[in-house]
Length: 370
Ligand SMILES: [Zn+2]
Image (tube, rainbow, N blue to C red; front, side, top):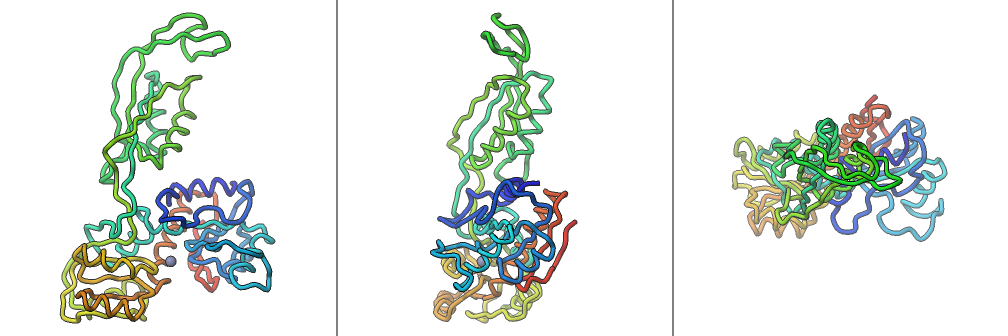
């Protein structure tokens, strides 16, 4: 398969339109037309990860953190990271792509996996970044293509309702379509030069604006007509709320010490640091994978008793404690590795012909997906 096909699968799992600000996403190094048979996934593109990719003959690396975050002024082997690593990938023809904040924000991504590891329930976004614009697509179809078109549009992402509790939603109506094919046309029914009237169905499906190009492409590919008739309506109602971090409730309230043990166990990481009021029971919990201490005010506003994130500085601990929030620094890697492993799992299941492996920062192969 081609690099561009892996990127299509990545975009479906972690839609680029969800990214926060000007965050780099997608292909950073390489040729979209190059062939891929083996893919390595990691939190960071380190020298060791590139070495592991070479040993596995992987032609592509997908990382959570962008290898090139700030513009590079040179590509010298004697420069500081990341130039030598980027240059080595280019030399070895290893394509490098990333899914950073779009995978933090995406449903099922870094923050959902983190919330799941801590057994949170009734989970919702912590810091809203986007309210999904919606469109309504209406397409006219000959009745024998009813299922084909509906399936193609559903698989591409149309018909999902914002609550995520329903998918494959659509509405059918029947009627008469009329047209006249002009010379040069090859109509699916009827003859050139004659006014035709045919029984048709109109399928209406709701769709997020982000999925819309893929849905239209899939619908057109499956549609038998030479000229497909369809309408697209922008809607005033909005879809799901997306955001960084998550907030949810524990199955049972815990003391701060029990919660600290719960976090250590859930993330399999002992060096968790905790600050703040040691007397408050913990029931509502906010999480922010990676360096998200800046969203502590969102955690307080959401009514969280505790907030689990990473890279917390001294004055942020002091500030949170003054506001009555229990703040836990559970390590950047420990809060994001489970979600990055989930990305590898999802890529492997949507690209079954690809050998996918997941690597620790030291290059160690943690998991292989055939
Ligand atoms: Zn991170």
